[in-house]
Length: 158
Image 1 (cartoon, one colour):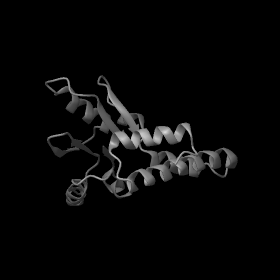
Image 2 (tube, one colour):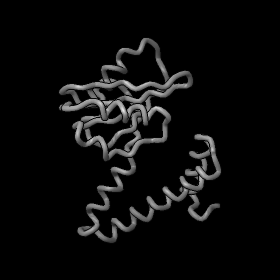
Image 3 (tube, rainbow, N blue to C red):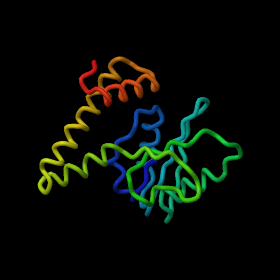
Image 4 (cartoon, rainbow, N blue to C red):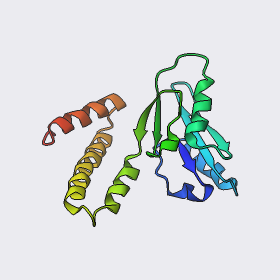
């Protein structure tokens, strides 16, 4: 989910998804929007993007979409930053907060808490390394998750 003032959209890190370039081209054609939310939807049968403009925040827009579902699908995985405005009220999602945003906030605190931040940044470095190895090995999402969990339990595992 992409949300925010139109002028800030260039700083986001997007997951690898074939429709992202099309979404970004569309965003470039929309000017002078006070607030914009883009919901990227991917299922086993289709991929599409929903665009919302106006005064509502991402959580409000996503809640409207999720309330319109006519059947009980699997839990929606919502990837966003940790702003409370991104969490839809009255519907359940599995929140996957953006690790890049979290890391950036830790980096901003390094001067105040150098040892604590170093610990967190080194741990995140291990996660990024493990993910690179998993991608190199072309693991399926399930294998990749298992690989991460195994490495988390035993950091020295190969």
